[in-house]
Image (tube, rainbow, N blue to C red; front, side, top):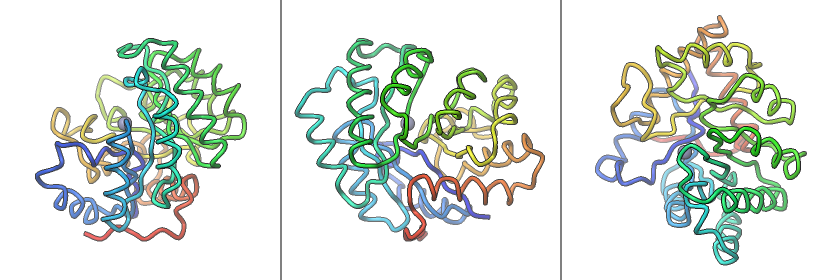
Length: 262
Ligand SMILES: [Zn+2]
């Protein structure tokens, strides 16, 4: 079985103690690549460093909506500079989070638009975080991202939103949320999503799937997401893994990328 964790935060301190073992377990679970996602400037720099150090790990660079109030010309310039590194395969995560509202909404929208424009300019896909901000996310995507490939990560919005973003050409990324017993509505959306639009991800260290719920998440646990997604589509997990991994390799242009070494 070949799997690809398309959204991990391997640079976070919670992996400092045992990062090598975490990556080794990922390899043994069948993962061939991991995309470690930048959440701010320092995490983006660390993501690139990890991608340079470990075969099979690639990076994205961006500023999370939680930290959008840090966004200014200088940050924009630095993200652009980091994005030119060859290990960087996407811009993000960026987007809107009106659940926590950690940054003022106007500043979130500004940082989001700017990163979408950068992705367009550099011809790189975008990784989008959207929480309780469907209307503004869609409006901005329609204005700024007409021909931009990308993924709405940790998908947890409505089925109407799913249809709209898929029509715009986006993929949906599914995490361990898919496995939570009380979220049958999300499995319903997953079942209705064409398999060629699905990416699997962990969002580790967060969002650990059943049966690891509540623990630190890690890339190897993407297998649990794959199993539930295969059930949603009524196909063998090996087939689901193959299709979704291929989706990710194509979206992030990793066909010729080195694979994970444990
Ligand atoms: Zn994330």
